[in-house]
Image (cartoon, rainbow, N blue to C red; front, side, top):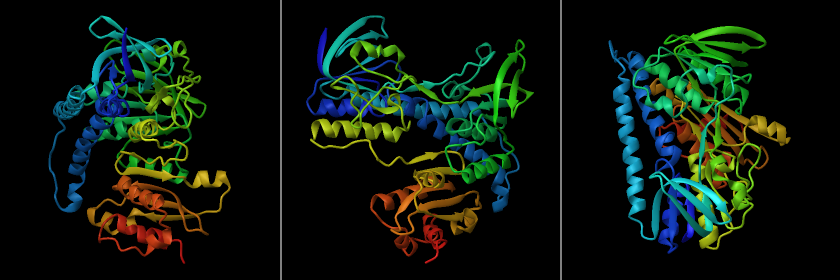
Length: 461
């Protein structure tokens, strides 16, 4: 058995930086990763998908450029070339992170699957086939999550795609059917429509992006339908059937009625599940909920003293930036004497559809549920000078404010550079800048964020 000061399981966006930081602080640390350095973000999430989103945007602009007086008479999409570019960028990021970790003193990086053999004891089934047992007083879990695959008749008998395997396609699907109308489903659905696929999206809720305000969902659906993407709400697949080498027949139940859809490919994008089952958490006294999410307190400590869980596997917001923030909270509390918690921290996010959907704080639906006094500021992108000039007026800005204190409570921006505009409002919220000050703030003209003046002018004096 080998003894370390700290064990980090998972080289994602919390585990990798944390392991290096621990080692640099003089702690003898081991980082265990069973697959690729960098976790979901680098290998299957942000890096590859946003790389491909850029290619899809280029294809879309080719179809729209005639509106700006630059007609593109003919173009083609080379998915193999798009994949090659994506793979190169992923490998550059993955290998760069791994090399930096391997050069860090006091840090060992080993590849294999970690399984708890007891309290503070981990058995690693190395990818080389050997086994190694290690122990440490401090253990940090960052195992991440995997695509959730629902139990639907016939699904396992077809070669369905998930958010990882769809990245390996080198030919554009003829007809892609997407299960799920949230982040993953909408980003990939729009992307492959722009590459040339016919796309149908099934959403089991009454509306897509159902965690947003109804007007956001309605606008998002309009935007997708403008690109000839078929969106079926209150619909779910109940059966899949495929003849040898032929098209897939999907039986769909929508609002109590059944009908069939034929497609060539199916993307399962109904959510993700924590990658915790193989860890054998009970052996270490670590509790998880019924979904497999590791239970933690506000300082990210599990039910086992000295063991912390970070990132997607603890449940809650599954974003790279939250995972990274988990690392900074845990490290600073343990080694810098701070007292940070995850309670009430801001949770900004951006969905990289085109246009983007950026969100911070509460929305109108939440304000109503909380029974608080509020006002809504709303501005169509059609009233934003920069949007008009660039030829893209889809979407709107929306902010929730306290009419008495004039504090901004939340904002949702569905529009060009929506994430960047949202971030300006987040900074205002972090700094306690009230909306009446933003109304008269001097912004450079003609930026998108300049129209925050106009957004808050809609509230009157």
